Length: 401
Image (cartoon, rainbow, N blue to C red):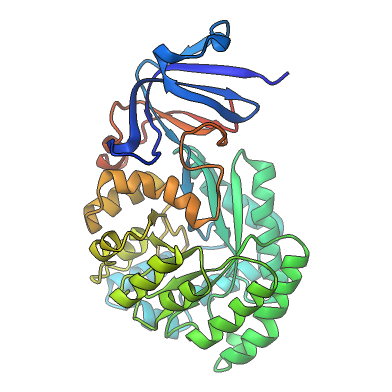
């Protein structure tokens, strides 16, 4: 018989569709059975079949869906604090990258790292996410840029689910940068490494989605398209780092493949927004990189609203442009830097983040969904975005109590 737990006297931000902000339910209750939500409603309407089940009184605490970080690079070795210092002394992102820094510097450290080293360095980051109510996160490869290291990164990402109570969606990102051994030969790198290793990773069951970095310092749209063509042949969904530093039409390209998401998108234009709206592609907003790189070009939030493109928020946790492991801080940044509303921020790390990962069983509080929930010592959802450097998590529920 499935274990049943009843929770009462909660303020529920169910985030289901409706005119009520946050789909807020005061004095709400929910029932968890067999790792799923079995019932949600007012405490006074609790069905009789649950009357004899001992209830947990949440004392008016806020309950939200478990948080979802839809864009991280959480597996890597080393750090790039020296580049942080270089930027503060005047060097920009492209200058650092062309000088052999940026992504390539992390590649060298990650190639030299064993599985044990990668796990040891990643676990504190994973723990930081979990401690803020994150139940699901995406982890990308992309710091190997060769067969062995890309596969090693994906295996380590898969291992996180066995080492910690968290759900991980893996993303293959070998089309992240051109490694030194292929300098000046990006097409050869796509053909000789990206595509063959994608096939190998897929055959090993290591890939949930395929990503790329469409930018002048990375790959052109036609090169990304070849990787996406292979992803389609393998039946894998796509997503794309697009329009972060310039507008190469990456978002339109991603939309043409029905991509789950286009991420960064600071330089996105209206044509790209329209293409995303038509394709159902989620815009993943990444304020951590904007903040760290001291950028000035903001993502077109108002255009995204106007065309009803779903907006997710994520940390972009990585060693260079966004060394951020706080999704709560990303929510505050989305509001403060980009004028997203607190409701948009919360939906962005739950309901829309689930869409950005192709997940249908999480992101809202509703019967049949996974019992991935966060219980907060606050009374209103806006407090989650309002506070800076403060974690009000009371308890995280992952797949049931």
